[in-house]
Length: 498
Image (tube, rainbow, N blue to C red; front, top):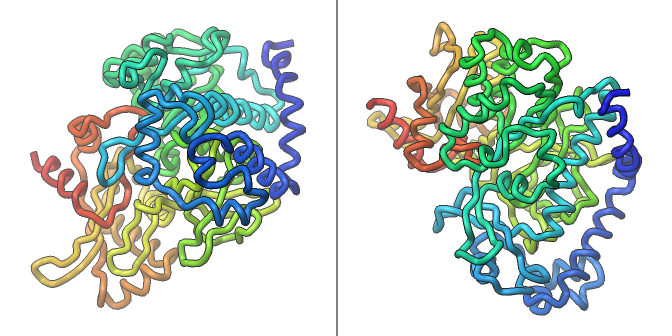
């Protein structure tokens, strides 16, 4: 029997437990809320918001306000300075650094002991459990895992307290036994200079028997391309013949899928999407034939949803299929009714399955068109399919009014394979956006409000240069896709001309 055949038994109990998701979603979520309120009732936040007197969801809504990072920032900073029992019991030692707010360059998300184990690591465990359930012939544990991570630094020089990328916090605290089956070595994984790290990871990993890879698609692709340069091979399976799965998350996979399929031609290769963020681990693609993800219901995360078209916030058992919702979370890391900034759309409520449809702050709605990232991804996928092009990176923003008093959307796209006719690509993209977004279609009607979109070809390496210039080069940082502001696109336009 293979090592995987032996290890597989460790996951069997959890595979059976996940069957409760089919019909027990409301019960599981009510249990999570009760647990969170009980654990935090004696914290400063819990006393202020009457957690001890909160008996049900309706009480919770009455007693607890909706929060964003700004409203919790002062409490989190006190926690970072060592104060105990503020948002969550005890002292929280780890803080995941993520992209900032309007007023701050970075956010610092608390990661408690319970959150680390019962949210973040639980998500990783369940990803493997579901993958093994779907792939009975897997040899996952007969080789190594290539896992990309970020870096961390001391938090206010407090002993044992760290701040940095979530992936670095996970690597720092992982069970030492896991280091026996993963690459690269810990010191390499935690390097802060991504360009140095990319080369070292490639050199360390290329001689190992890698069976699975995990990370953000854009940065993993950069590492894999370095592996190909060093090895001189044509396809990745020539380097790692037993590679079978890529656990990916962080950004949409659609723009990268074709590049991975060209790099890895093996028919036994699988791709599995996860929704893991600094704030928690929320979803896993449990069916390889379904792009939606299973919402993880029995971790230390209680979910609420605000309809994007207006209306009251609802708990999980109040959601409807095919509506866009902004997601709120309350977690065992001390986030309470926290607006995470992502929007989701449910494809099923039995069990609860969803897709990430965009960001509450990553959209273009300058003229009432309400273009979200999900629309952009579908439009690009269609234009690529029709032209044979491949998109590496992109961003888009509105042109509010030019010298001819015309308004439009302006896209900068970096191609890994250019279309023969850029104008045709732009037309196909524009047409597809009208087909899938009625508001965009209405604003494009006879070019009255919006003119046809403008496509600008980015020079090779533009987005990487821009991210480097902003100090954002690395696996935890993402290119902003859509924005109502022209701040980012103007920076890119200037850099594209240099």
